[in-house]
Picture 1 (cartoon, rainbow, N blue to C red):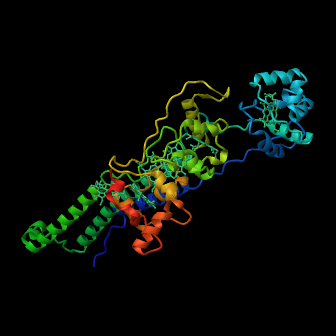
Picture 2 (tube, helix red, strand yellow; picture 1 turned 180 degrees about the vertical axis):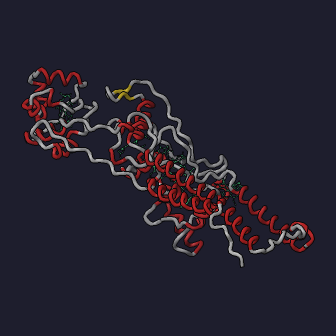
Picture 3 (tube, helix red, strand yellow; picture 1 turned 180 degrees about the horizontal axis):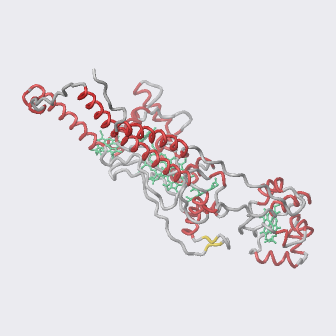
Length: 443
Ligand code: HEC
Ligand code: HEC
Ligand code: HEC
Ligand code: HEC
Ligand code: HEC
Ligand code: HEC
């Protein structure tokens, strides 16, 4: 048999060079995917006064943070660098009892008092001078350099940007691999044809047969079965489509202020009913008015560093609080209202049709159903969304299943006596209490 002489053929060379590029591109890809170096920790800073800034920070947070911030005016003036303004002896006296100093007519004290709307600072006679040294050491630390990228408005996340890049690298690599595979297949096919030719084998030409659709059309049974199949799937899809009309489960609009339930109701454990106070007493639950927000946010102008997540930076959250200030007309530098307000137009999420009667107080207060049963794990939502479908089936299902908590609830004493006799059971579901009557839910 004749040996095939294609050792030096062009296609062979091509084949190898393609395989080589494939290897190189894969190794370089694995390098780009390697994790970036960890950020360098900020160096410790030396302090001006003899105190210990770490202890000072603790004392400051425990005693002074209610009225003072390091870098902004709050109830009292900003305290960073205050050591440069006064003698230490003056500061000891001031912190121990500022009112006495003002009364005694100390010029600096009186001036401060006048400048700060005559607010009185708490006296701290219990603080030793070393404690005050520590606090002043803390306030004398230079301001930590803010990372350049986070200055100003919402910031594009670096992590996200990074993943965007790696994603396109991966896609690019895959496309390359695909292209190479195609080229290789063509080459292999060519080589095989050459081998076959060299060996004198005939490559059979394609036979012409009856087109498949003609064969199908001739078989009546097959046609019938597929028609039924098509009709059934069609009906199923149409039914599914119609059933979700007007159902807005998981509706998650972008709100004018990025208000996070995770941060408020979750991390900070604020009770739902502190803000949604109407849920206890009325049909509707309210969205809190902005002065409720300001009960806390007069003093909270920024989030703590640990609140920032990979999705949302601290600068982003701080910017959102500024939106709140803008809406209520709060000037943080003078700690007063400017009188210029603008409404925040929250986007309504839950909305039953007008012909349905639903009452929060009946469910929350009387029946004692938790908010989360209907609204989902709200304390974990970064952005609020509709958890339940709010369909009639959803209401009815729960009324059938839920046993009403009657023990110790005077509201139910009488009706429980009557109905438990009627049904001969100890426990009653909402349905047995009339929760399936059309008129209860429909006007
Ligand atoms: C109840 C609020 C309140 C608390 C708590 C408070 N301060 Fe003050 N502080 C003020 C006010 C208000 C002033 C401005 C003077 C005035 O109106 O009496 C002030 C002024 C000062 C000044 C003078 C600032 C300047 O610019 O000259 C120093 C220093 C000071 N406070 C230190 C402290 C320290 C230290 C603590 C914690 C141990 C503390 N304060 C806790 C309200 C407070
Ligand atoms: C600090 C105030 C505050 C607290 C606490 C709070 N919320 Fe809210 N809630 C709001 C604000 C403001 C909105 C409107 C903005 C939005 O939809 O995110 C809202 C929206 C909602 C909505 C959607 C309203 C709509 O438009 O249909 C539900 C449901 C809700 N909250 C449930 C809860 C539950 C449950 C809790 C307790 C786990 C809770 N909230 C705690 C302030 C609060
Ligand atoms: C009971 C106190 C309290 C009330 C009431 C409150 N907040 Fe907050 N809010 C906080 C605290 C505390 C933080 C900072 C959390 C942190 O640093 O971890 C915060 C952070 C924020 C932030 C930045 C984080 C985020 O959620 O995007 C915004 C914006 C905000 N609040 C808006 C509001 C609005 C709007 C209201 C009124 C509907 C409101 N807050 C009511 C305590 C409150
Ligand atoms: C039995 C289920 C259920 C429970 C429990 C429940 N909700 Fe609702 N909630 C609903 C339904 C349904 C709507 C839509 C009401 C409408 O459109 O009239 C709604 C709407 C809301 C709204 C939008 C404003 C409104 O009333 O239309 C807020 C805010 C809200 N709920 C907060 C709460 C809070 C806070 C709690 C807990 C104290 C709570 N809900 C408990 C079912 C429930
Ligand atoms: C998580 C379970 C649950 C869901 C979901 C639910 N309910 Fe209820 N509902 C109850 C319970 C429990 C009662 C208390 C029974 C009572 O006091 O009469 C109740 C009572 C009622 C009542 C008063 C009935 C009476 O006899 O006076 C009405 C009206 C009502 N629900 C309407 C609705 C509507 C409308 C929806 C849907 C939008 C809904 N409910 C969803 C649990 C639920
Ligand atoms: C527990 C409360 C509840 C009871 C009881 C109830 N419904 Fe409904 N019904 C609803 C809700 C909620 C909707 C709105 C569903 C939606 O928007 O998808 C609704 C919608 C409807 C609709 C409009 C079609 C639709 O699905 O949107 C009709 C018709 C209707 N109900 C008839 C009845 C009749 C008849 C009865 C008595 C046998 C009854 N309902 C009992 C809560 C109830």
